[in-house]
Length: 327
Image 1 (cartoon, rainbow, N blue to C red):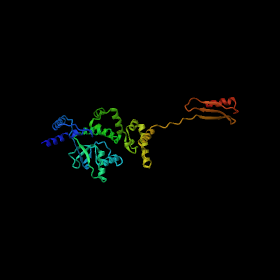
Image 2 (image 1 turned 45 degrees about the vertical axis):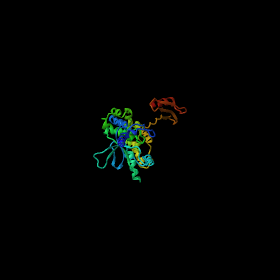
Image 3 (image 1 turned 135 degrees about the vertical axis):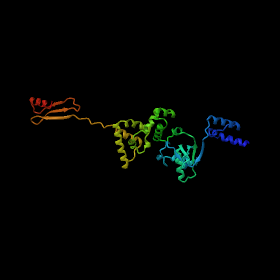
Image 4 (image 1 turned 30 degrees about the vertical axis):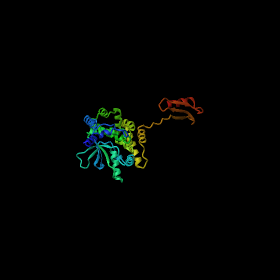
């Protein structure tokens, strides 16, 4: 009987043990006290009885609103995870999934952990079939799934501003009625920060094409380009420069970094300064063919300067007549 009670107590308190830091001794307590405490915490909602297990990655699919650009997941971009999994001989941090009911080909939908899923699949395809995908199964609505994904990934540096911005753009319309204020409140972030992030997703595709890798477009770059993209003249200038950059790459030129590309686009919006007009100087000769007058007309039309030259052989009447013609 005691053994049965102990097993029941362990089942109820497994999730409690996860809160104890590694190396910290668990406090001693009676079996019945532990069970009673666990039941009370379950009833109060303080303990979530989600399942964590290893599953076949082939039976999982990314959620339609996941924040990863699958085209950007490669051996190189996931090299850190590949090394960590091989070193530990398994995946240690579980992904967050929810169970599917209407897909005969998949059992789980990945809310957070697409990069880990890709890495496990890559390892299985490259001589490591022993790897399985560690997941925590949760029951979530779509809006809850978005917030869980955002909280889990907001501080991750391996998610680009491009990926995060497009996730936010989709969620804004689907869950928050297009209201920046409502979305910022739900995510506990500032409205201004959210607006700057969304600018990344709202750059025109013609300007985005200028970048050799769209993931190079950061919040800072979008901050500089977005206002100019709203100006018709500046936008046309940037679009023309983008066409030139694409042609350069297709012609074999070395791709530019994100900041370098942005500088080229910004520079294209600045009209070249018109060269200053030089003064027009004119020489008038006397009847004897010698220089008699020089006439300077300033570029801005600020009058005329007439200089009488010595040694021309011209008399007073000839000079006055020539000056009259100039005036």
